[in-house]
Image (cartoon, rainbow, N blue to C red; front, side, top):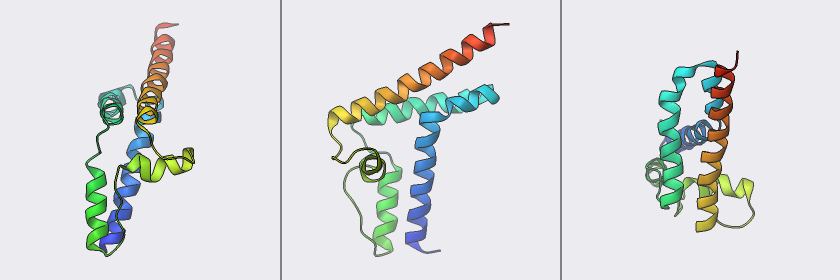
Length: 121
């Protein structure tokens, strides 16, 4: 299998993980045990954003692209793939902190509503 294809698969996995972090709380409504996987993912996603760190999938993708003769990038996955869709400007530290806060707030709201509905007959 081509290194570039593997790099693209890493991007798809990374995007799926980001989607799960942001919206995975909705899965808990259907499958409550999903919270055991989702909550650590939220902690990881928000923690990476707040710390300014880089997810380990980013260097893996860049390494595969390099092996395949493709271009690599500096920075992180969010800056490279997500922000160009959401924002025309580059990723700034305050934006990263805001993205981490959005992840926490959205998921706190989803879990709060879910818990409320479970307790209400």
